[in-house]
Figure 1 (cartoon, one colour):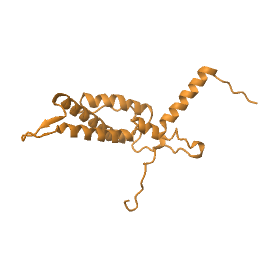
Figure 2 (cartoon, one colour):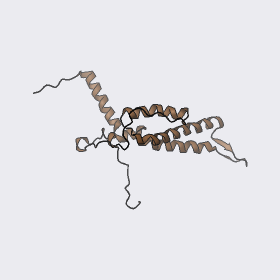
Figure 3 (spheres, rainbow, N blue to C red):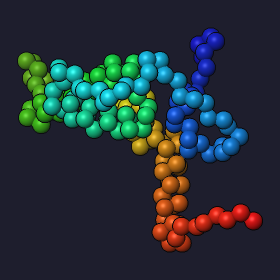
Figure 4 (cartoon, one colour):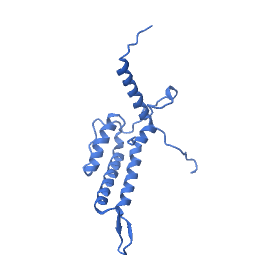
Length: 168
């Protein structure tokens, strides 16, 4: 273990502790912003290709609607979008050329795009985890629990109708 370092999972961002199973014992701190919330939806950078822009146009509005975006998140989102597009570029090369290639000596080896695809996938997933963009990240962060409770509440309202609370 590194001297003075902690091990284990990184702490949950405050805005994602809503579904925590610890209930009222744990006070949910205010979400910390560094640059502030963007006033409007950030647009994708011009240099992104169609794949990167598609990721941006799906993920960024969802994160904005959850009110979890900070102005300083833009570079991280750009890197995630770049990794996403690089994964798809490598995937297209492999679809055309296959996963194996021959060296000049005749030896069969993995195509170089296999490594690019694998590295881009791993890089993207690391960025995606930071924003809760994977199923396992959402489950760990408690969003899945919160959504389940919301669905149960809606199902009960559908079955039982809205209840009116009256003072005793």
